[in-house]
Structures are given as structure tokens and as C-alpha cells.
Length: 610
Image 1 (cartoon, rainbow, N blue to C red):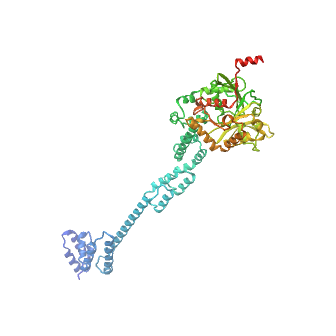
Image 2 (image 1 turned 90 degrees about the vertical axis):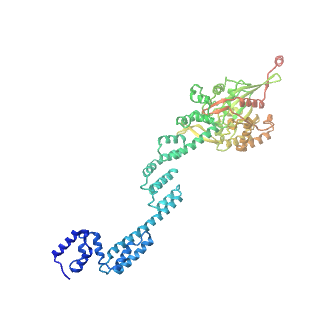
Image 3 (image 1 turned 30 degrees about the vertical axis):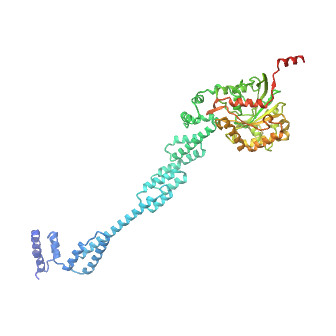
């Protein structure tokens, strides 16, 4: 074969390049076959255009190989099976033509890599879609209110697109019943969570809310809500507040007289209750609200309850004793008697107990009750109940004796020997019990409480036993225990000298306005209450009275349960006076006491003659 000099080859290639697309590729093939130092690769672009160069290369391929290569390039490749078939064909092509001088093995290798990458991509996409479907199903089935289930989901699908939503759900779960353990758990589980700063703040402030919640005081909770409106505990605080508010309202409805102005004022100051709200609940009226908010209570007399150890009861009267623990309504009962003074009976406002009943009259006439006091106070109010029979007047001379609730309760409840005689019932009481007057006992029962809380003053002693101060103490007294012990006192041998002068013993159930509106219903409710809560005392008293064959003769030796209420009570020691129960009580006292006929003109004349 001929050989071209370097200059000739350079000139030839330049000439081919100048002709561009006009050159005939067959001519170039002839030149390559003619000159042994002229190679097809030397005509690569830019000598020939890419299209012409590819035609040139194809002129030197095996026709069979060329046909197979052309078929490979045109095979379908849109699915995994098609790609796998193409992969197999390419591998076969390479194995058969890898030693051929002129072939498309290099291109086939590149195509094989592309096919395998495509298969991998499709399989990855299929796996991704399968994983998405699994997560979609798991997400739909997930209990999104359970903290533990949310965390399991996170561990199963760490790259979930719901991560932020799960974070919020976890935080809401913590807030639903928040405590330090749940806050710490959230911080451990979500160290880079969306609510980490809130959790840390909540953890720092948890002790504040925990203390407020532990107190369980509605005012403290209201203050917390006002002072920490963005607290993570605000929802729990609001729920606790609403529960306590409903409980207070229920308690107000059950025992409105327990809510003194001193107890109400903090609730008003804290904004817990409004006038309209209390009116809607029937706990106040326009009049009682006016009394509650505008009445100057400093204008009213201070009730003097200074104990008198030398107290005496006028002779020739029947002593009416009112036994009861503190806060059972003895003072309200006397207020009722004071407010109805003159309606068929007369209470002496001069002498021992006169100022006390006069002061109570002022309170009764104005529809408010005095504040409670401490002390072992016993008082005697002398009076006369007058009845007319057949044109003759009969006078029932009485002494109303209000026993000290504190002395009465503490002497009985806290006696170390569990045995008490009437001789040590308290300041002034012993002398009254042991006088020669006839006696009637009324046992006062509060139907609204089984345990009676009350405060009392206790001496503070130094190491030598000297009184250095007095402190306010609070105890709870069980009415059931007190009544059982009291009725047991009636049966003790050492008390029989006193009991021989007792003509009647009955129960008075106070705060009758809490037992219903109808009077017949109140009486039934009172009897049911006594038999349900104080059956032991009731049974013991009934047996004692029946066996005495003397006590309660006016009621066929039966123990009666009378009801009493000053009237309709509203919040803040305010009430609407109703004398109905007072009138019935006076009639009851009249029926169980002896009367003295007034002397007629003839009687007085005979007395003069004698």
C-alpha cells in the first residue's frame, strides 16, 4: 500500500474539512484503504461532521455486528422486564464482540451501565412508593392521642413527613395531664423538638403550679390563671378552677348561711363570682345584695359573750336548755325568738341576758346574723308565754338557756375517760342544771353536716405552766358522737337527780330551709335525717323516755323532731325573717311547760280575806 508524507496527509485532511458536508464518505473509505498510514480516526470531528464521521465508522463494522447493535439501541426499555431483557442482550453482545477490532463494545458497555442504573432507579422508586403506602396506612391507623404510639411510629418511620405534626401531638399529650415526669420524657425523646423551650420553661415553673394545685384553693388557682395566662398548665388550672367553682356553688346552695361576709369577700375580690351569676343561682336577691355590699355592719352592736361563772336562773320558771355543738344554729334560734318577741310571749330585756337578747333583736329585725365569737358563754333569758283559755290567762314562766357550744362539745368529745357528768358540763352550766327549776331539754341538730368544724381559743403556756398567750385552734366535732354521748348522760345514775326535774326532751333540726320548701316535707326530711345519721342517739333517747314513764308526758312519751329556720337564707349572713317556725316553737314550749293562771278578782279577794 502507498504511504502519505506528513505534508500530504495534512493537505488531504484540510481539503476534506473544507468540503464539509459535500464530501462523499465512500471516497474517504477508498483513501483509507489505499494509504496504509491513513486511519479513520484521523477524520474525527472537526475534520468531518459528527454525522459523517459516524457514517464513516459504520463503513468499517461487521454488518452482522452492526445489525445487532442497531437492534440493541432500538429495543424497548420502559419497564423492569424490558430493561432486564435489554441488559441480557447487551451482555451477550459484549461477550461476542469484545475481541472484534471494529465494534460498538465500548458504547455497549456504557449502555449497559445506563440500563442497570435505570433498573436500580425504578426499583428504588418502587420501594419508595411501597414505603410511602406502608406509612400512609400506618398513619391512618395510628392512635394519635397516645404518646407511646406516636413514639413507636417515629422510630419505625424516622424520615416521616409528619414529624412536625407528631411533635405537636406529643406536646399536646404532655399538656393534657402535665407533670414533671412527662415534661422530662418529652425533652429526652425530642431533644430538638419544636417545644423544647416551652418544656424547659414548664419544668422550671412546675413547682409553682404543683403547690397551687396541692392547696386546692379556688382563689389561689384564680390568681395563678391571672398571673400566668400563657402557662402550659393553664388548661389544667382552668379545668380545676371550673370544678372547684361548681363545688363552691353547690356548697353555697346547700348551706348558704355558712358563707359569711368574711368568707365571701375574698371570692368577690378575686372576681370568682359576680352579682348576676349568684342571682341566677338563686343565692342572692337585689335586696340581699344591697345588704351584703352596702350595709355598714360596724353600726351594729358587738355581741357580748363574756362568761359569767355565777350565772343564775330566776326561780319558779321552767328552764329551757338548748344543747348543741357550735354552728348548729342555737344563736339563730334565739334570734328568731328575739325577732318575734311580743307575738304571744314576752322576753325580758332588762336583767341577766337582757342586753344579749336586745342585741340579737336588732340583728333579727335587720335580717343579718352576727359574726361568730369564741368562748364558753352561757346565758339565761327570762320570759313569759301567755295563753288564754276560757277567758282566763295562763302564764308559762320560762328561762331560755343557751348552752356554750364549745364547752358542751369539748367536754363530751374530748373527755379522756369517755364519761361526763352534768356536774362538769362547762362554765355556769352546772349551777343552772342543778337548780330546783323544772327543765326542758332541746337537742339542736344541724342537718347539713356530720362533722362540725369550729374554732376556739386555747391558752398558751410557758415552761412553768403560766398562761402567756391565747391562740386560735380549730377542731372537727362529730355530731353523731356528741349526740350519742349526750343521750347516754341522761341514763347515768349520777345525773338522775337532775333528770328528775326534766319534763321533756326533744330534737330541734335547724337550718330547715335546706330541707325543702313545704313544711310537711321538712318535718319528714328531719325525721329521716335523724334516723339515718343519728339512729343510735335517737333510739337511746326513745328507750330512756319510754322507760321513764314521766318525761314527754305531753307527747304520749314520744320524742319529737321539730324543725326551725329563721327564714330564707342568702349569702353573707343575710336572711328574710319568717316567724312561722318561731311561733311553732313557742307553742311547743308552751305545751311542754306548766302554766300559772292569773288570779281573778274573786281569787285576789279571797287571798285578802285569808
